[in-house]
Structure formats: C-alpha cells, structure tokens
Image (cartoon, rainbow, N blue to C red):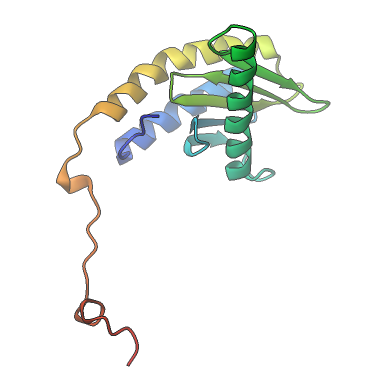
Length: 158
C-alpha cells in the first residue's frame, strides 16, 4: 500500500472542498476518505454522533473481507459495497488501489444518487491522490525533533 507522505494546507482545503461538494450533492450525512489500512485522509459531514476512527477501521476491514470473498468466486475485488440499515446506510467504493470513500446517508437520499455522485468524486480524487503519493518529499515538509541539553545528556529528572 502506497501512503501519502504529507498533506499541505492547500491539499486539505482541496480535499475538504471536494468532499463537502459531494455530500451536499449526494445529500449524505458523512463521508470519509481513507486508506485501505483504515487511516482517515479526509472527512466531511456530521461527525458528532459517530467515532470516525472506529468507522474508518471497520470500513477498511469490511472492504478487505469483501475482497477475499471476491477472490473466492474468481473476482479480483468488488469495487463497491452497500450496507442497508433501518435508518442509515453506508456506501463504500474503491477510489484506487490504496484508498476507499465511505459515505453514510439516510432516507433523505437514495443509494443510486450516492453512487452517481461517488463515481464523479472518484474521477476527481484518484488523480489527485496519485499525485500526492508520488510527489517529492522536501526537507522543509519534514518535522525535526530538537533535543534540549537535558534530553541529550539523558537526564530527564534532577
């Protein structure tokens, strides 16, 4: 799995703008862009009622389990998953080999509308994520840990 080495403020703004436009058009409650390991890359929507970290980890696990199911019947993977609940539903789709878009929505919208806008979103996200993964890492983007004389000497407590 290829990871994104870093996100700049401009990257975050661009991702947030795409996701906000998406949830407004799809009339969804929440969307998460995650890597297939379950780490959240970007998120947009109502996050007060759910633990986004847990949702992301479970969504990535569900996607991985379904990939294995696909392999068992001769498919490489299923590109999209839909979980229908009583009040809320989840639609997940592969953006590329390394990332997943997960969308939570309710009865205000339909899975067809969410899927339609997801396809459009993926066409914008996939090239952006690819360029983020393959851009040059500059030293100015790395964090540097500076040690104080106390830490360098090994004396933490006097």
